[in-house]
Image (cartoon, rainbow, N blue to C red; front, side, top):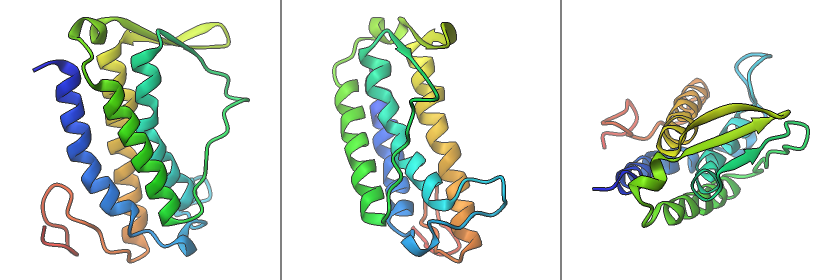
Amino acid sequence: MRIAEAMAQEMAQEAKGTRRLLERLPADLFGWKPHEKSMPLGHLASHLADCLGYAPPIITMDELQFNPEEYKPVIAESAAGLLQMFDKHLEEALGALDGVSDQHMMKNWKMVMGGKPIIDLPRYAVLRSMVLNHHYHHRGQLAVYARMNNVPLPAIYGPSADERG
């Protein structure tokens, strides 16, 4: 099995639990945050829905010039908007991974900020850390936000206290 094929299978499997979590989030909680330094729930959920959108540029470009002043994240205003964003990015990520060779996945990819490389790793490593692991990290944070607001949690890696599977 090719690296890209394995990553696509993992991404598609993990997306099921993420989607179930996103669809449960009520818009009236989007402004809630657990701490003054924390991201509001709606921003965190939007960031999670956006994470898979990082995959296509990593696969199709050799280098990305990142300017934080120009970066404007899209913030969904409803659960439907979150799901639309998530589904679009999942489809695009899976499409970008389709047929990608191991040789291509082993080629370095760079993210450059202010003329300095901040990431310079093989594509598979960037996809693992910046897309998949990043996605899981924020899904875990969002699950805590949901629990703190009595939003029933879906089963993700087995039963939750709210759902048996």
